[in-house]
Length: 589
Image (tube, rainbow, N blue to C red; front, side, top):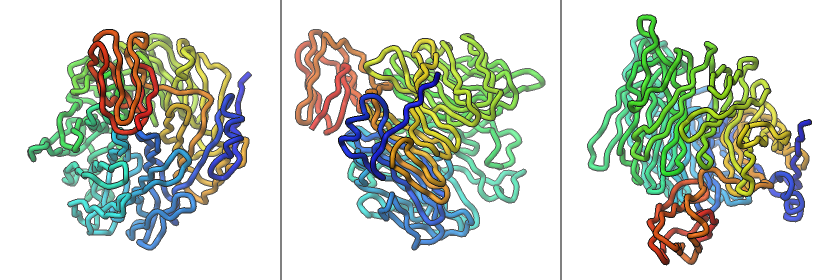
């Protein structure tokens, strides 16, 4: 019998401390929730990131039609809109930094220019700041340069003009300091050559790039993944430029909805200068990178790979020289691992046996030496460990476990129509189970418990809300879960009194106290019996019985430093924040 534990809440924005303490030991507790809203009510959620000091970054959009319209976070006005000529409203970029109680520390928003659906991502930096990577476009009908008002109130323009009759797309990278100041911006040039078979809609505005993921490593290098269908140009630190040209755009009409193009992962330094890239080179129908994770000093990635038949035969598919083992031309799940210099170490493609298969909101997580794939799909995969058949529903949430060699070890389905899994976390005090984060369309955000080895469902499900219209990221940090969703109507944090309303689509940011202390890829690889780590003001000290390498992670899972500690005491200077080293949580003041 399924056990569904309902949440308890006692206030609109935050719970009374006694109520939280009473419930936190056995089930999640709703802490706070706020809606990012604007008069046009067409906003969306994009991404979440936990800063090194424990605060939260959330990236959303808010729909506006005029410069006078207000953008709000809860009841607080945080910006103003943009006049444009579309009927659905300008999707103003909104970046908000909050403390653990949901109080806004600072926010930034775009004045001209808006976000493209599903094209905005965050990567927290070790100094408490954040890198933002977005698929940005001109506001319709405007000829002015796109601009962002940062958290200090300063307006930064992008050196980008475009025909006001069209909407042109670029990848834009912005680094914000921990206090909200824009430290630098970078733009990727995307070719805008009209496609010969393009419709009137897309003739002037070929949609040449998609941005699906961004992460930062311990040296603050930035990795961005996605797909491209037009030549894209990056700039290096010396001013020289590198252009990537796609090969999988045969017969593309310019329609942004079609599935074609090439995957890419691009690496940039801490100042946003291009270093290197990984792209697909074989003839295929469609390839894309959807997510990357940095763990164990490696880059793990997942995405899609749809093969192509040439003269009736399936074209061999490789990535970085690795044969993907593609069995048919149906859309496959792509998974791989590379070193941090983007040399592919291993990669596989799991092709569906069912034609017309589709995947959405896919994710990859690394816990210890196991790789977990989640998402929502209609597909039938032969995983060697058994067939995963998700063809009986429109979309079903799936969970796949792989070993360190990317060989399937098991799978599970949610068993509900239009549901999705969106990430995996583990309890650092429980080696036997994992928790899967999920969503039912127009239904609950939830967590489900599974056996870590067999992926057997453990008859425990915690509902977080009763109504979340779309699935977006959820991020667990220690014993707090942050959720981002698109909502419409009344959203209740089930079992309690927190209730938020939105008359049309807007983004919801929420936080929950968990009864488990979660961990993902931040487990240190060190012998805790031989190494002792302590924190002081501005430093951590490593006391080792013998020379050893100690990895230091921030609470987002990003590698901050890899220290070659000598026998005795080694001191490492670090900015104030929360860290994990040698399996121990450290607070640097």
